[in-house]
Image 1 (tube, rainbow, N blue to C red):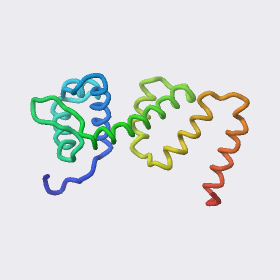
Image 2 (image 1 turned 60 degrees about the vertical axis):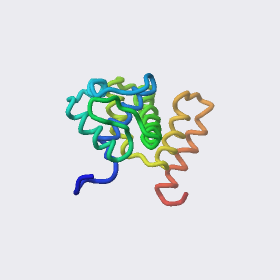
Image 3 (image 1 turned 30 degrees about the vertical axis):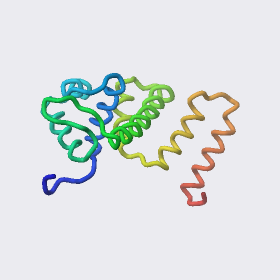
Image 4 (image 1 turned 90 degrees about the vertical axis):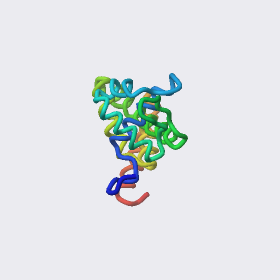
Length: 154
């Protein structure tokens, strides 16, 4: 690995990783051109990202060959994809935003979410996604719990 480079995955590289995961759910491997089309980037950008992801142990990549995920890559991509899906659904179904806007926002938000935030968001979204008056008490309890957390009481 080159000196001066971080030894961890960046938010930008996670986007590439999720796209490889989405492609490889439908077929055995991904191509640089497919990834470039999905992300709207150049082929050299994808090649550089795949080199880095390979160095970090997230993908199997050799120049001019197909791209597959390692176990480490698949595990990381699954978590990120799930977070993005929940946020995308929230932005579309609760906030009423267009799919393209929801996709961009969900990709951005997913990079800043740790496990505890993900759990709180999922709990909140579960209450809201099929909201009925029966869930009003559950929402009220969630909001009260949130207020206590902010005050350091929970």
